[in-house]
Image 1 (cartoon, rainbow, N blue to C red):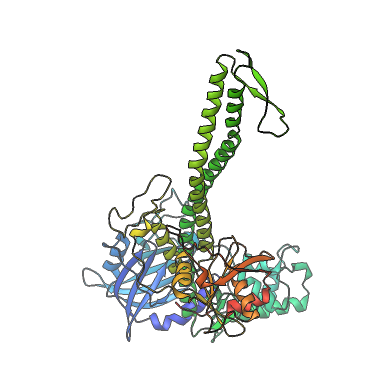
Image 2 (image 1 turned 90 degrees about the horizontal axis):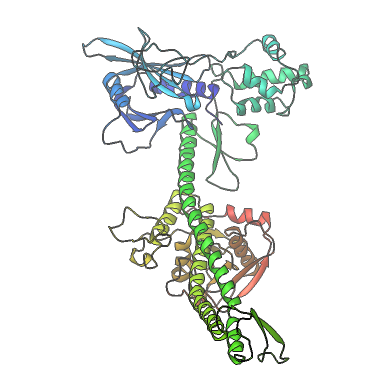
Length: 612
């Protein structure tokens, strides 16, 4: 959920005892929208203040980030005024998303002065502003802007500080009659959720929804559908959730996708009924919940950003080679149709003295045809018959040369298209930055992108096509690959490659000759390996079907039915010279046709062993 005014009030209440009295030892600005305060109070702790448009917040953190070579201007201003100072108070006004740090410090003249550091948590308008409270003058802001960007206020040094404009929402209500009166001032056709969101301070869409659910009502219920009892339940739920000053104990929670163990979906200061279908994890403090959630969100943003940049490269290359493949196919089609010109040349030569000079076409018997059917051959009347025959011979030789040259080009281009399709599958299914980094290194190795970490001239790129020998110049990574490892219902281990490099490692190095290998037939996807005991030729049928289900799930055929899955022993696998990563061939195999069952897949995915 969002860090709304109510949740922020609970967080302020929790952190205030730990912050008040703390000394500010050091100040850093590792990101353009992020300030770290190194605090000292019975030990050292780091407080993060973020004005990120996607995840503004504040909380203690143990994460340390690399600082820029020279501190930004705002960081230097904070160091000048706040380093060595003491936090004497921390407060939030009327559930607004503005947290004020009151800090006392000695100025250049040795006088003890008070300063206010306002953290405004308001999405893309979030800001961190240092203010002199005696004159309400802005000393500086993390994000400066003038009236050209905001007609309401300027955030510039020397300007008067104005709090963000009020939205006209009501503070926490203790009187049920007044609370009801506020509700019934709204349109009767409006939903309760939207009324709570619009009229009462500190409430986010998730919290408004939770109030309605905890009142035993449907989230989409309209105002005119609520009776007296419903209104009483709504008020009790509102009081229970939205009055931080009266609630002494909270139970912070994190919520994960039940199918993916590490995918964090939401957090809350108390268990929310709307998340009951998610996997819940209780955490000791709201600070921990906020920290873990937003660090996960930041990591996911980085993950999607890197995935997007790599996907763009792969898609552009795939489109390029697909276009080339189409050109080669059309050239081969035209060349095949031109092979008939050899016969026309021979028929013209055989009938040289029977065809009048200057005719536009010749009808001759086709002695290549057992029925001796007549063939009509177009002619150029301005040249001799023998020159027409030579013209057709030239067209035939040209077509023959085209076939000879274009066939190998088509095969090479088709290999590139198939390889890039496999990369797209790996990119879509990568779940960590480590996996994306491995794919990035693979793209570097194949010459699709340059690697700054490589020595100069290690890779040389041709326009539109990577060097075929680029990969041979790269050193293999020293780290042992970490493929996905699952456990079948019969207790067998099942290994699944996360990318082409891991596929090669599984199939050609990890797998023993008699281990079972699976792959979706003629479709990009992961290699799957089932280690077998000595003397065991095949696993049990259940393990075989579950391994095939994983091969389908981690392929381009995910979600399809009656998918063909090839399986064979590792000793049957061969990797041709100069073959792309992840590409192997085999002569002997069996094929299984399977439609994976959802419940079996869920059990398999839940059995994944975390290796990173």
